Image 1 (tube, rainbow, N blue to C red):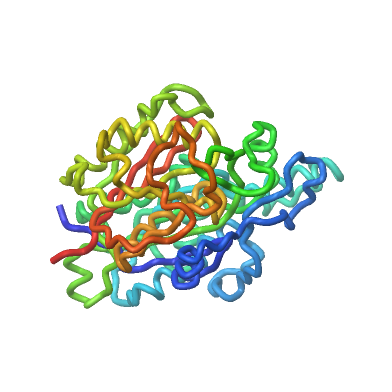
Image 2: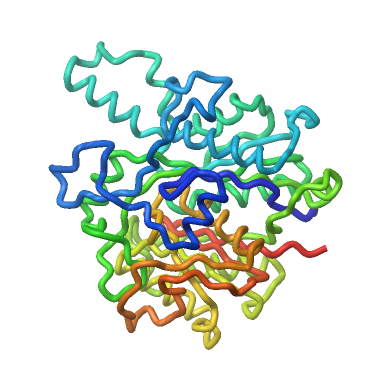
Length: 405
C-alpha cells in the first residue's frame, strides 16, 4: 500500500474562490451568508442562504460550452482547474487512463429538474427540449470534469448527500494507495437550488438570521453551494516531481446509523464508529488527534449528537481537542461540505492555524466541548479528523496528517 498525499487544492465557495482567498476569509471569520438572490423566497418562512456570487464560468471552462453544463458541474470544473493549477501536475506527462475523478454530491444538477418542471407546467411535456434530459443525473458532474481535462481513468459519483465529499476522497485514496490510479481529482459539488431549500424549510431546519453551530440559541442550518477538489497522488510520485505536499491522507471510516432517514442517532452511534474506524485505519490513537473539523450544521439535534459522539469516543480528552464548524461561515454546501472542510483541514496542517466557529455566544450545557469560538487559533496540529454526517445515517470521517518524511 502506497502512502497518499494531497498536492493540490481547489475551492469555489461563498466566501471566496481559490484556496488563498478562501483561507484568508475563513481565518478572519468572514460570513458568506446573506439574503437569497437566485430565486424568490417570499413563499418561504426563511430567506437566507450561502450563494457563490460573482462566479463567471467562462473563466474556468474552456474545452466545453459553459452554458451546456449545469451549475454544479460548472463549480466542480472550476474547482478541478484550480486544484490542477495549484498542484502544478502536467497532465501531458501522465497516462490519461490512470488519472481519474471521484466526486460527491447531494442533488446533482437540480436546476435542470427545476427547469423541466417549469417548462412542463407552462407548456406541456412535449415542449421539454430533449437535449436537457441527459444533463441532470448526478453522474454528469465527474464526467464533465473528465471531459474538460481529457481524463480517461476511474470516474465515479458518490451521492451520499452531506457526507459525500469524504466518501469521494476516501475512494480516491483507495485507488492511489492500491496502485490502480496515478492521480485522482477527488471532492464534491452542489449548486444552490429551490429543491433542497424547500425541503429544509419544510423541515423547519433553516435558521432565520445566521448559523450558530453549538451555540445554546442555535436555530438551524443555512443551505449553501460550492465545490472543492483535492489532487491526490502517491508520496513517491509527489517526491519524484518535487510537488508541494499539503497533507497526508492516513485513512477514513464509514458507517450507517440505520436509525432514521433524517434524524441522527441520539447517542451518535454511527458517528462514533466512523471516527473510531478512521483512527484505527490510520494507525494513530485518540491521543494523537489535535483538531476535529465538525460536521456542525447548527441544528439542535445534529450538534448535540456530534458532541455526544466525540465525548463518547474521546472520553476525558474530548474537551481538550479543539473542534470547529466552518459551516458557521459557509452555510451547508451539501455534497461539497466535507470536501471543502478537507481543504480547510489540509491548510490547518500546512499553516498551523485552525478556523473558528463564528456566531458562538452562549454555551450549551449539552455541547460542552472546545468549539474554537469566534477567533482562529494557532495550534500547529499534527493529525486532524474531518467529520461528515448525512441523511439516511451515512457517516464518514477522514483522517489527515502533517506530512513527515
